[in-house]
Structures are given as C-alpha cells and as structure tokens.
Length: 217
Ligand code: GAR
Image 1 (cartoon, rainbow, N blue to C red):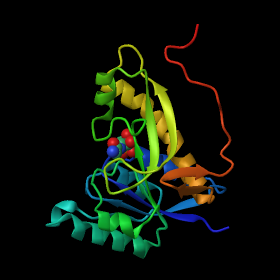
Image 2: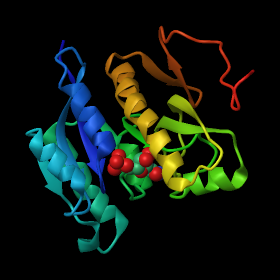
Image 3: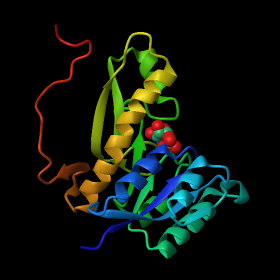
C-alpha cells in the first residue's frame, strides 16, 4: 500500500519533526515525509531533516508583505512536493482561511495543552497560573482560528509540585513525541473521519481508567 505523503512545517527546534522522522524510518509506518518547510532559515529542525535526507525549503515570512502571499508560496511548495497531509510541528505562523480551505481536514497541528484549554504560545504558563493538576498535549485538525479544530488525540500529563514552565514543557514534550506519530498513523490508515466537527476513529480501542493527580493512596 502506498504511504501517505507528509509535508511538515516548522519554525524552530523540530523535536516533533524528529519524532515523525523516527516513526517514518520504520518500514511498516504508513506515512513518509516528502518535504520540510521552515519560515526561518535558522530553524534547528532543518538540520534534522537534512540529516535524514529529506528535502527542505526555507520560505521566510519576512520576505512577504502580507500573510496570504506567503501562504500561497507555502501551498505551491507543498503541492509541488506531492504532500497529502500537512503536519504543523512547532510552526509559529497563523495560516490564512484561504490556506486552510485549500487543505480541508488535511492539516494537523500539535499543541502543548489539553485543548480547548490554554490556547496560544504560553500554554504552560497558563496551566501553572490556573493551577490545573493535569495538562498535556493535543493533536487536532487545523481551522483558521488559532489552536482550534477537531481533536484527533490527546495525552494527559500530571502537573507536579514545584513545576515551572520548563519542567512542565519537558514532561508534556515527551508525550507530544509519542502522540504525534500515533495520530498521523491513525490518519494514514484512513481510520479518522470528521463528523459534525468531531473526530471519530475506527477501532481506536479504549481505556475507561481515570488518571489521578495526586495519585490515589
Ligand atoms: C511544541 O511543544 C509544540 O507543541 C508547540 O511548540 C513546540 C515546538 O517544539 N507548538 C505550539 O505551541 C503551537 N501552538 P519542537 O519544534 O521541538 O517540535
């Protein structure tokens, strides 16, 4: 069976890109990365892609006068590479409604909170300020509103006494690296559909076990 072709958009470190690269290195994984596009030339993730012999492109948003002309060039690059699913992996640009409409339910993002809580760039600070005992990450289909769209998969992570933004971010990031390849696999296996604005997953399995924090005695 042919593999789902991924176009990955990054802006920085690229550790979620690395998780996808590592998953795709397994011959039985049902997706492959055809291009990695960064809006910043100095993104560390570009080095990760090059090390894996994946084609990279830099499309610097600063070279564009308006959001949509940047988005049109990114769209053209993804189409030319034959991408079928776009994975945002620490891509720190809002995509225009025009762009999102070109790729209906074909763009996924990973966000470091249990959406719809704590949207934006400071999710961990928001979680700590709110005093939640569980935070986590979400993989969701992208809509033109920031950090919104049908949720494919989430992982819950405890917030521990003494946590700061860095320690919580590191714990959530470990879960992100497990979640993103798994969510992309479900999509690549054609098990994910969007019905009435919500994701339905065929044969997802289920656990009814609650996660407690602090733990039960
Ligand atoms: C990740 O924690 C990702 O969830 C977050 O940026 C980080 C990128 O790290 N994305 C967002 O906040 C999007 N709203 P990475 O470059 O190492 O994958």
